[in-house]
Image 1 (spheres, rainbow, N blue to C red):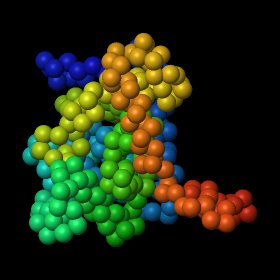
Image 2 (cartoon, rainbow, N blue to C red):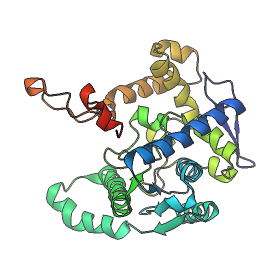
Image 3 (cartoon, rainbow, N blue to C red):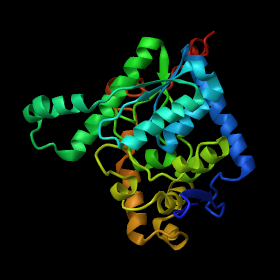
Length: 302
């Protein structure tokens, strides 16, 4: 579990959680595996490097750190794509990029969002509302990241962690659109612990998580609880296949929070799956990530 010392703005990691990887040896192994993963995925794709969307938060900062360790600073591009972003967060993204020695470019997407709101939204769905515009913002960021990746023969290195992925707390074809997620197996507690271990500044580790989809937006407000309550429930209900009732008895989460977490996981299955096809003539399995065995040599680059 992770607790925040608000007097000093320092995040300290406790290792009494339900099997979270937060001790020194575990973190060293996690770090090595994530770095190797990035290197292998880029090599397998024949790509020249990766592009990372930098927000000034812990997830994107840690992802950039790992990418630099895997590929070197000259093969990592950081993009700052503010739209409703706090000015301090935008500046933090640039500061972190400079510290890593990577190329950094910032583009304000607010004019594009405004243009869409003024000219497109009224025609296609006048009552879309704030959340729909927030999702639009995430998808515009994805467009920018993939444009940069296509132009440079890079991969888009996503920044989502396991907590977000299991909850469906990402925008489909927005921040959920990426070629790889180096943090995708790590809960927020583990991300924060690993970030400290690799030297991410403590002020970033302790920062209130936000997707910056609108002014004042925070993960805790959207989800109704902090990750320190959510993650132990996910760990038990998803990873250990425990009943929700048992998870409630063994965590600090309220019954309402535990039920909400379980419901979010179930309801967001479609966000973690390849879009389905009807399965006509038994062809429904051809659009996934597998391939016939006789094509394995081609997939292995032989």
